[in-house]
Image (cartoon, rainbow, N blue to C red):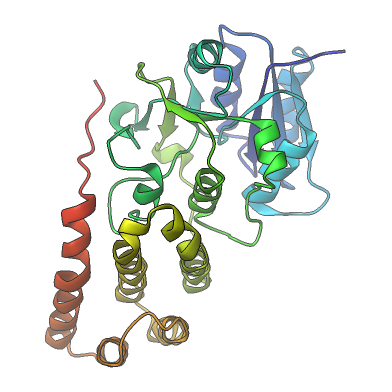
Length: 334
């Protein structure tokens, strides 16, 4: 019976034209005791044929298909449940693992077998050029950083983590299938709040988040306010638990959630969407009466000058306070 050390889980949907470089990057790993689970979320193109060209020649690759369309989070959850390795890596179907990625992360486990989470260095590759490093290690707690994602250039971990499968199962940590966007924020925060023993690797980049033109898929903005409201609700729901662990940052976390609400409202061009999102904000009891009135005026007004004044008011009160506490410089990859 095959007993892999690492399961690499790749959700995919209609990526027949771009998935092959991702699969080849997995195949070229210089550590070969892995399984790669390609979870197809009901593609309508010839993804299955492309994947078959790999799995027919390499038994380490398995093709799975969701019984019903569940989105990327559901596909990743299928991968978790079907995996049989000790450690799990999530890899998007247009991104790249460099050949030393598995060796790099497993070396940390060999050095400290009690580790439950390993975070490697990852870089964004844009149109063939290496751009910047993603979510680098700093003195700021990762939980605090994930509460500072809007509006900032810092982004949550993507392909650069390796987590112990039993830690996920035992703590019931799965991807939220009700979130159509921002699932990585939800997953990473849930993971960190379960208090894994983790380590940042002080090594060279071992994976790329590929942001090429050919890999771009269109964004359906029709349900965007609902999606933003869902991730805002997640932040609010976790606020008490986060505050217990980081009591000194209680006011900062509240400001963060307020800033997210304002940022979202200010970036909704459709008045109907803005009205819907304002109603959601009002239900949360985060803002005082005056601030709620200003936000109400903002989404009702067409006067550009007045809108700028209201935006400036909240930027000075919230964003500036956040920037002074959570400012992160994003270094460029060498």
